[in-house]
Image 1: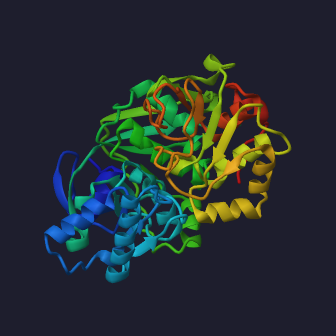
Image 2: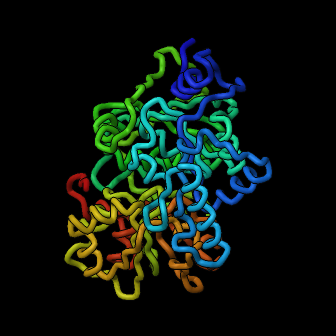
Image 3: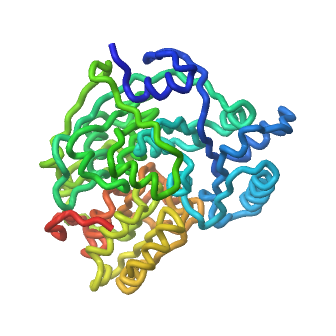
Length: 425
């Protein structure tokens, strides 16, 4: 039997010995990342082990994105330590405002097809959009990578998910994942590697593919790897990535499960009830009043997401009483949004546009706190009770377009009303 994408990548990084799901391997890591919410643990471990020589530090990025800007003395001191470490060891440093780790790593050309990349965040699955194996680890694991360039893995089982057709106007990659959460549950892909294939994936731009791989974390996935095509290779070349080592699954690869998605007839989706897998078609909640709208995060803060919001809000104003915040995923995206006139259009519509970062997503910077019983609609990845600082406030999760439609009308609204064709940034 042939090999899946994850089996091929781990095989190539573990001495070119074919591996299968369930095997335990020690693999060479191409690149590692630690962000400011997990880096202190890694730095403490390095100090505890008295590891003065870190030969793989130059293949590591430190990203100051969760506490950006730092909200207390502890976070500010952690940033000081990270800056000093990066300068001393020659690691790549992305400072406050540069952007979210999962955006700046590919933008910075730090990964390519066939790579094995680890990061101190569950959404490190994002890198699978580039035909790489990206997965989340703890800070102590990154400490091991800095010292040895290696890490152990249990080879995950693979699921093959085929999107049968391009998505219709007003429906996005976000809706695909939410529909799978409704179908499989939040633990439906625990420690599995997802392979997204089909016409629906081929039709997507890179921004949407990144959403698809990123949001797989909510399904419990260890990885979510896409095949490479001309769009992938062109994007990587434009961002200075290393020579790609394109990986394809064998035609006789073994999958624990095969699923198909009728993507041509998929409706916009909403997660509700403080559970990311409590999902319904947007029409089931049409008319629900909303008070606070948020677009951003590593899942949906890219230029295409902002373009969706601008498409709906340009020349209009937010509904009376609705607050809306947009946070680009990186400084580069912010600058592109400025260049294209998106920031002006959003500002005139009544939207507050923030510098790039993760702080609003998990209420670290307290910028998106809702009042009692206020309803939030967000393009973030999670809607846990109290995630935004107020346990009495329900959080709805949808695409950037769904969030923008609700912000304009003041109530849950089907975003397809605003799209005749699919739009891209």
